[in-house]
Every structure is written in structure tokens, then in C-alpha cells.
Length: 78
Image 1 (cartoon, rainbow, N blue to C red):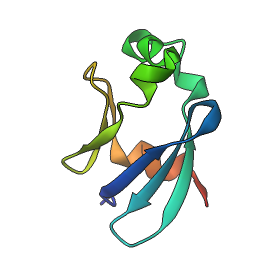
Image 2: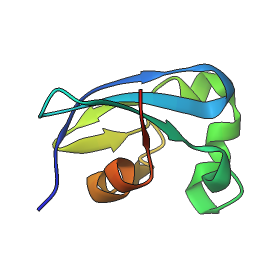
Image 3: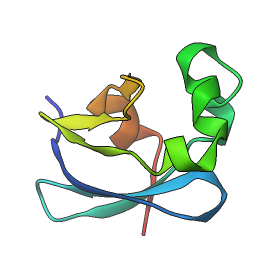
């Protein structure tokens, strides 16, 4: 079972502030992903800032997305 993302805000240095359905806020670092596949597009800060909640997770306007379980497990409490 995973927690759904209910809000996302892009922060400095390719990090995201995520709010999960339990109210917990966590910081997710996107830098390790920026050299892989579709995530390369997110090096463009304007593209990075297009992040939004989509269903239970997040996605960008280039259709890149990340599993909510990864977002929770690999993030740190804010």
C-alpha cells in the first residue's frame, strides 16, 4: 500500500515539496534522475516547474511521472 500525493511544489535545486494524503510533507530530490531518459527534459527549469499532481502521483508536462511509492520511500521529512 502507498500514500497518494495530494500536493506538489517545485523548490530550488531540483527538489520537490510533496504533501501526502496523511498530511505528511516530504522533500524529494530529483537530481539523481535528471540524467535518465525522459527526466533529462527536467534539467530545463521551466519544464521542471510544470510538475503537478496527477491521480495519486505527480507528472510534468512532458508526461514524465514517478511512482508514489518511490516518492515516499526516497524522500525525507520536511
